[in-house]
Image 1 (cartoon, helix red, strand yellow):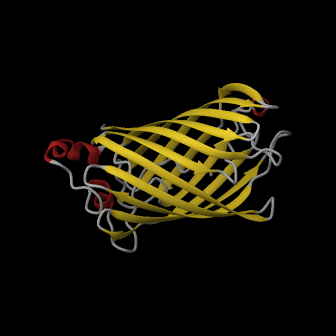
Image 2: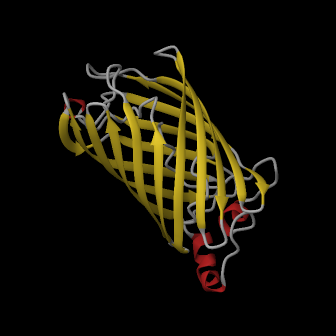
Image 3: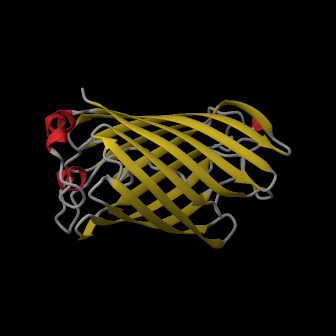
Length: 270
């Protein structure tokens, strides 16, 4: 699905606060070694995420690398940009280059940028815009603009366990000749469990309705990860893709069945 890139925390109706999720009241208490960097993390206004996606399709594969940059210049407001580089090796579409640029704005209370990987990346009130900077003829873009408003929140259901629902809508416009129109509404729920040694597991079912195809779809996401330091973490994502990402060249006659993602997370403390 059209991923929300901004990394943040929101104060939900259940009473959980940003620092509760980020700093361990529902997950992991910071160690004495970590406490020296906690204040710097709380003041941080910038963050980088590096990721590599591998897509398995019926007629080939796609590899996509991306850099996600998040900037929070004001309290409760954040901006983000994701620039992907795509290598497509499909039967009828093959090429490489810059992919579609993703821009995002989010409003949320009690913003805290953090490198803790279990901090949700899809909460608050957000608006995403996908810009067709890729080349659909080479398989690096979707040849369409896509707008994506979203709403997410958090609920702590047990110590070190959090439930994170999100509602999202996608609609394409200004479509080119090679575009495959997108209009999808989806509801997903992240169930995140963090252990004391900073290993975490996340399972996310997502139910979607595709207005173009007039059908319902169900996808699943499994995440395994490890945080090594306060500022550094690695995560592995395995996902089914019954509804393809609009950034990828997956039209009506081509399905992307699975996606594997390896992501590095790093915070800039300034």
